[in-house]
Image (cartoon, rainbow, N blue to C red; front, top):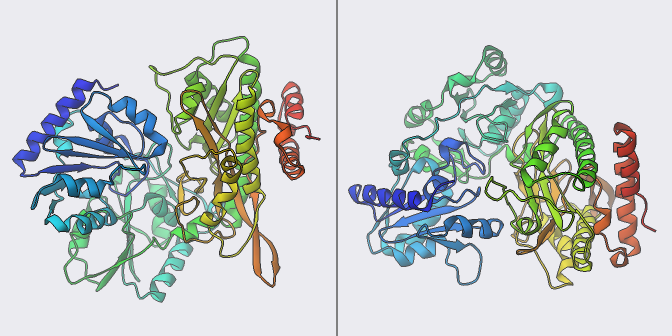
Length: 596
């Protein structure tokens, strides 16, 4: 763990470099060169400079002050990690907290220079800053990685081996997918398409890697036109088998950094790209005559709508995962009474249960095991310093997932380790009712996740409660555990939910210093009836794991709630029990017995 004095020294060194480069401010984001949510160790500049290790955040260092913005998932964590560093925490989205651009507009002087490493700044982010700060004639210097000059022991950029996801698991060859993208390009009169999103590139090329922890992707760019597809990768990541597959599917390979030279000599009259993923340094290479066409990655929707082969794999993965989770929950409930278990050792044990399942690859994200007050930290990550011992009381919140060779999982369960109080049960049951209501809703075509978000929150609202994160996110097929463009959130999303989309259902409630509750299943959008009002859809659950019976206040459940709970538990028992040992099966039978 970084000491506060080390953080202060780094900030002072950065300010000295800013003075040398005639900069009045410096922006440090969480992104890699691809606009990724999670990044490899080489790219963790914001964490290195601030000491805040959450996955989302932006640090701004000015001449005499510094501030860091992060969202509600990380308020508690950031407050602890930023204390005594001289960095002010900006709780993003709260009343009276300025946005990043408003803060810069207020603090920078007329004609000041704001520096940044343009390779980590997306086109969309820079455009928003330019529009806001033009009032003060702020200029931007995007060609300096000042943090790289400070970070002497920086890890090297990852170039781990890649592998091909066979068509028996992907459902389509890379050549077929490329053909479908070219059809979109032709329809929109796109001459060239620049891709930087790692999971989109992985999906298009049926390519998987290990350059980002917990996300099986490889560092790469792609440039497509009507004649060529060029994949820019570090050559150390390619073996003959992968190279041969790519060649057979019409994909040429070039060095990772050769993308800059190729863009500087780009000869088509237009180029299409996703401004949320492509960085400004790439765009600066293009000739001025090239028309820049912005939009969502053309791969986003095809990737989100899983085909029959991908969905079959996901269902298999969730059976395996459900067996591991159920066996672990039985182990936890029995062993917490007789031995010392901590947050870290508990997470390690759950991974051991997963590792013995067929086709286990890796976790799909860093496990969240939050006991008691730690559970109220939405994206808590236990360290040696914070690793709490579990006692026979209170809630344990466990948000974990895995990649298998057939699919990806993400599941949250909250369990009482001793007798639950009436207050604990009331809050748990309100979350459960909303979770089940969303899981069982039926909706017409055109419905977005924003339209459905209220369903999961309403039982909490009745108690005057809420939660500060989205209700659901898309999940990739052996790719990113957080996948767009669909989601379920209060923030407006215009993407309709369509057949084959996998999405999470995870309402929660968090009481600072006491406990956190979150219940999460993955589910897939499936066709329902078609009527005069159009095609209707419903959700089918993928996750197979019992809810915590001891935490449910049955008096709060309506007949409809009971029917939904019993139907899900019946499904869990039927799918999971054949894979358990006798004592585990008996425990599951008791956990899933019908509520009358």
